[in-house]
Length: 77
Image (cartoon, rainbow, N blue to C red; front, side, top):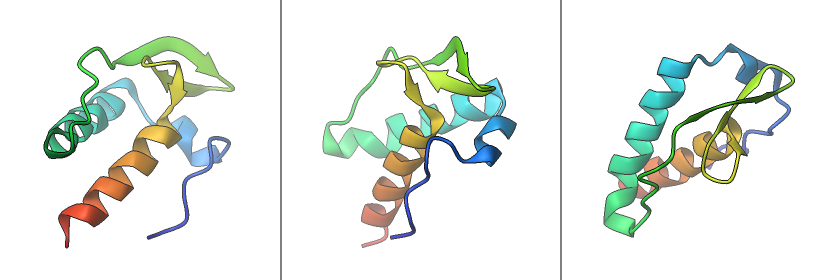
C-alpha cells in the first residue's frame, strides 16, 4: 500500500466539490461488498485551511482517499 494521505497535504486544497462527490460515489460502490455504507456522506460546506470536508463526522478528503486506497487494493486481490 502507498503511504497514507495526510490531512494537511497541500494538494488536497485542489479538490473541487464535483471531484469529491465522485470520490464519494466510488467509495459507496467499492464499499458495498464490505458493508461500508455512508448514504448521507456528502461534501460539506465547512472547510479547514481551504480543504473541503466530507460530511460524515466532518472528516477530511484525506480520509476518503485513504479508505478508497484500501478498497482499491483489496479489489485487486
